[in-house]
Length: 346
Image 1 (cartoon, rainbow, N blue to C red):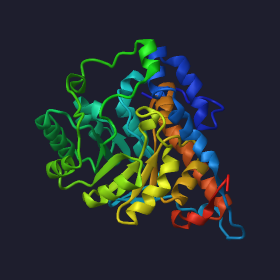
Image 2: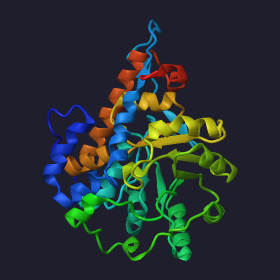
Image 3: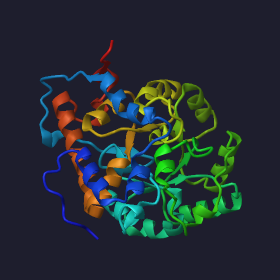
Image 4: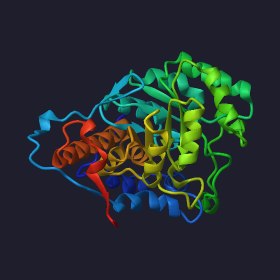
């Protein structure tokens, strides 16, 4: 169910205030908020300002020469941007995850679907022919987890992004003050997530779906990046859970260089947290990310205009990436190398 496309929206941030006006206050607070004093939430944006772009000139590139596409685990997507997982999307719009899946497919990219959508995972899988990954929370009930993973595999999901930074909820004071209550009636609301995951559990998850690439989402240090490689995973996502877990943790863009150095090219490194501009994407790729994930802007687009709103957010970002590549002298993503960026405070 598409809704009228808003006029004069030109950046991703333009969607947030209209979304806030449409959503119940507690739902907006849940989607927008972070943990503790929300230092990490704010740092996710501020940290991008500490990196400068170093554009190269006279490269003989026209806009029609640009190629934004990237191959991830055998699937070619149209740009190095995936839709990040976020929970209970029907709070934002009646079509929820189905609309997001259709928008991602229309944009030619992949959607990472949250475990909280487990009751409709087959519907999401069939909502579009676009690539989809499954974001995994491991339940204490391992049989239930294994059953979900079997459904995920049977439904054609292309990868598993296992979240590893959710021992319990971060202290999200906005939700406490607003009295926000998670939606009821979903199977995940009746299950308890495993609070004591360890590196030994990686092999168990791998054993449930050995045919699918397995990424760990929530890695922020070189030490854990090395352990991830040793555990045999297929990739990591540098992430602080959108600033919603441990306040005081580094921004994704700040942790990215040490994680990239630690994996030493053995596995792809993706990143999320605070990406709002095409220039943010270029900085992330220059520091070694294979792609980025974007969450809250898609939530605001969904709230404002359903499927069309999510698509517009993704297309705005594509336009900005192309513009930034052209002005930086980069014809393809392979041209976005470490020497494209420098520390602003160096």
